[in-house]
Structure formats: structure tokens, C-alpha cells
Length: 149
Image (cartoon, rainbow, N blue to C red; front, top):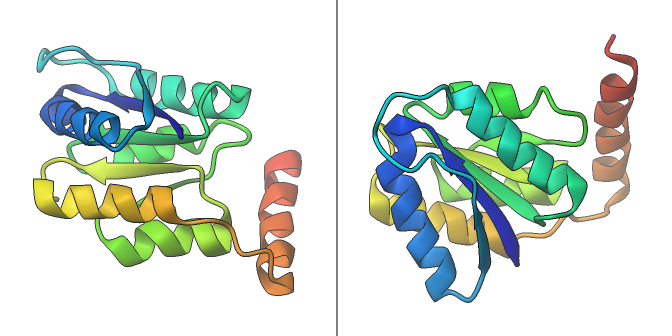
């Protein structure tokens, strides 16, 4: 799978670890930065990951910041991105299965590396379940995106 990956300075080290896991698992990684722990703005990297997913350059995206919250908020501002903050495996797979999430946000200052690896695997291993209730709910989310009201 092609996975876009981005992080701010707080998420840099975890991003590097995730990048290695993804490569080791045979995924094509699109590293969109940052490249150090020097202070940067998380919206820039969340937007880069979201744009890669929306354009089709990547099939899924992962953004990492200190809390995960800011990156998730920023990514969700882009049409076509459905980003969930996921610091546990249940959220990581359920968000894909029920909500067709295409990006997850990880909290580098909250989640440990072992759990992060499990979360990423759960996210990438999940598929949307096209049950009527999930499709209906997803269509309502898409309507909100189209109308912004």
C-alpha cells in the first residue's frame, strides 16, 4: 500500500520509526517531512499528507504530532480527508470499517512505540464495510463536507 507519512517536530522521531516499520512490511512510503526535531507547524504536514491521499498519490495517510489532536483537526479541513485520532487498535480499525477513514493521527507524546506499531497495522489492515448503515452515515458525512453546514 502507498502510505503518506508526515509529522511535526514533536512527532518526528515516531514518524521515523513508523516509516521503517512500513518499509519493512513492504509498503511504499511517501515521507512528507519534517526532517528533524526543529520546531515546525503541524498544519503544514497534515495538509501535505491529506493532499497526497485526496490526489490518489497515497492510499492512506498517517500524521504524527505531540497530541495527535492538532494534526487530526488540520487534516480534516481538507475535502476528501477523513482523519481520526487513533491511539488504540480498536479506534484504528473501527474508524476505517465504519467511517471509511483514510488518514489517522498519532499522538507521539502519548502513545508508545509498541502500541503505535499495532495501531498502524490495525489501520492499514482494515477495510470499509459497505453495510447499509455505514454507507448511509458516510453519505451524511460527505453531505456535510459538500454543504459545510
